[in-house]
Amino acid sequence: MVALIIICIVVVVLALLVLFLVFPALRRHPDREMFRGKFIAHRGLHGGGEGEPEVPENSIAAFRRAIEKGYAIETDIHLTRDGRVAVFHDDDLKRMCGDPRKPEELTLAELKALRLAGTDETVPALEELLELVGGKVPLLIEFKCIDLKTCTALCEAAADILDGYQGEYAIQSFFPFVARWYKKHRPKVMRGQLSMGFYKESFPKKLAGALLFNFLGRPDFVAYDVRNCRNIFFRLCSGLGAMKLGWTFKDSAALDKARKYFDGFIFENEETVK
Image (cartoon, rainbow, N blue to C red; front, side, top):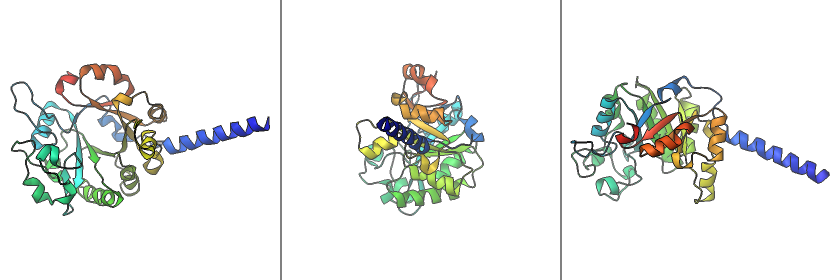
């Protein structure tokens, strides 16, 4: 009997600990509606449309196309060597620019001397993106961090720019310290935690996939891999009140299959949402 009582106590304590770690923000942020039921163009509306030239991701042309179609925009930012904020996704420049260096190793001017995917498009600065969008559609901005020091510097630099922006936007990152920084320094901004199952990854990544770092930033929403939409921790977090964004829907079949699990839909390929 004593052993059973001890087991029950341990189970209850562990359950309460998991709830504490996973719990999202208690508030229901008023800006949630900007993404509810909306389609969000992943890195802008890139690729080639019928009779249209190929448009590279995270380019001014891709963002312009998304605005013209009325889609919200998901994008990514890095800190440059000279402390500027550049709009770019990958950890290095090889895939998009044929350069093996990292965005953090170059100044903004050096980045802008490169070309995206062999086109005339260049890497935009965050200011250029904001000027183009000008509040026409909501923005979902992912912070790309390589370490805690860079994370803090990126948050500070981006926040200084975004403070003067009048349009709707929210921030997100795989790195939980981004949400933590925003919770402390810009609490009014809607913040999100990006994640996925990480089933075959390292133990720390498994913890991140289980959203057990939510206690650091108490995110308003969770953006989760659509392939892992049945993940028990994701469903627990959403059941506790977090808004749910799904990434990345790449065809209509995937959208139809997982739509019911999410409130907003990050997509590639416009045929996905037609």
